[in-house]
Image (cartoon, rainbow, N blue to C red; front, top):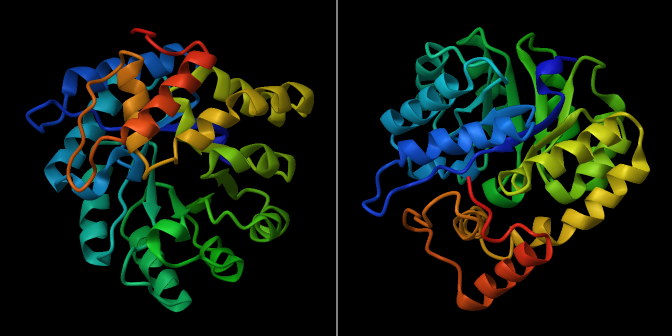
Length: 298
């Protein structure tokens, strides 16, 4: 198993300015804030980073900033997902030239490929780059699931080295953790399932909640990997309300609202995403207050 992807990685939000451009200053600060608080690796331009609304040029710029700011202090897993295989391959090649440590690619969304199409899609990406590739399975957002049989076929491709599993199907998660090759990384793609996945033998998480609570989520994962499940369980229970409120509306609306409340970014989205309702915002602020996170500054 590649130790670079063992532990807690943050699916970074992409800060924007009020004019709609990438807030490069905030992104740099946020990257360093994450590293200073002990995060194990960073994941720019995933779907939490609003990648569907970023141009190819913007994606490259975001990834370049994160790689430069990390300065090899932590690994960088760059998001290169999309619904068109050839476009994803070109993006993956362009991102590879920036020298991240690996690539994360989400299952094609909307076109709902068959298992054979999923296999050929990821095979084509992997064959066109040298970097390790982690597949992202999130069927409630993409409309299709990577079943364990297809995943195990993909695991035979040398540079497909792991999966970010967010099916929400505990039976499927059990099968993947039990039957995947020993060197294959099984990462949770759902904060609330992380403790269970780690108890089953998974290697870590690509987390939304670690945007807001990087130290706590990293400690949770570290404790579970060390089989200290008392500590891990206590941290899980503490963070669970924040994990849940992050999805009270479509991700990353709540987490960006929370980060703005914490003083870490400006609360700016790109359409079709809009700010949360006042009802949701009150719930978000209450949980931040309960956890002692509201008003926290850089």
